[in-house]
Amino acid sequence: MDMLAALAKEKEEAIKAAKDSGLSARAFGVYWNLKDDEPLRNAGISPMELARDAETEMHRFPNAKVNDDERRKLRATLYRPLLGLCKEERGRVVDLVLAILLYGDHDAES
Image (cartoon, rainbow, N blue to C red):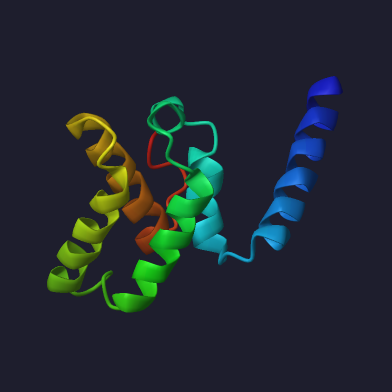
């Protein structure tokens, strides 16, 4: 029962944070999945700023899901704010962000 109560509280907090953020559902999903990411924290990269940047870039490349050229350009723009991470971590984060933005896949890391 305590676990259910904790999950319910976490859900309420997530819903409130989503409303307060002003982000779209998918951009908020980027933030929520990366909010506790240790490599980002160690590099001084804000998950909220990353989510905002990702949302902005999605507006620049609205057909990225179906257009290979736009998807490549979107991917390239997502790497820029992550230059403080090692190559493997940059790739991991960009893959996760793209999976969430393009396909709504919040379990991309699993």
